Amino acid sequence: MRASSDSLGGVCGAMDRPGFTASLVAGGVAGVAVDLILFPLDTIKTRLQSPQGFNKAGGFRGIYAGVPSAAIGSFPNAAAFFITYEYVKWLWHTDSSSYLMPVKHMLAASAGEVVACLIRVPSEVVKQRAQVSASSRTFQIFSNILYTEGIQGLYRGYKSTVLREIPFSLVQFPLWESLKAGSSTASGNVLSALHGVWRTQGLSGLFAGVFPRMAAISLGGFIFLGAYEQTRSLLLELGRERP
Image (cartoon, rainbow, N blue to C red; front, side, top):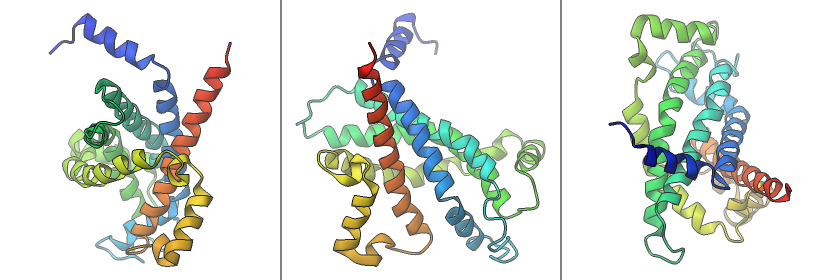
């Protein structure tokens, strides 16, 4: 269906609203930060789950194998999520005191995951294959997938990835939004947030669950949302200071 000129104009106008550009850039920065910082943990997790076994998959050697795919995909992936998230929130005008606010955040996060996975899944497919075959170059792996499996090979597991990510976002983002006022976790003060978890829950709280999967999720959440909020706030402040 072809969008009308009025609809396109509305979308473009919304994208020009203050905050949308900041959300796009801040989301991209947050995605790159968390992916690059936690990449070694992700490689170890992938090799532990490999059918050929941890050592044959590469062990602790070349733990940055596949990082070009992650680096290329991180910015557009996270930017796509947050621009969709913020846009859906903007479309659904709801009073801040409304009981429907959590529902709005859930729908916005779900839409963000569906869009972001269009970029995330191909990046993940290439990255994971590079992680368990460190001798192959990322571009070579990408080319081999296209040649032998076609475009559908890059989107292998798209539906399962979306179904995996949405439930997590349904909980994470309404909670994040509700904690924004005065919360060191949501406002981007990562050290204060880590200290708070350590003080109340100890080491088990920081690394709850099976290591390294839960360690990556816990640390990744702090870095991802913290970097996003800090970068977005900085960009908005710079925008206000411009004459």
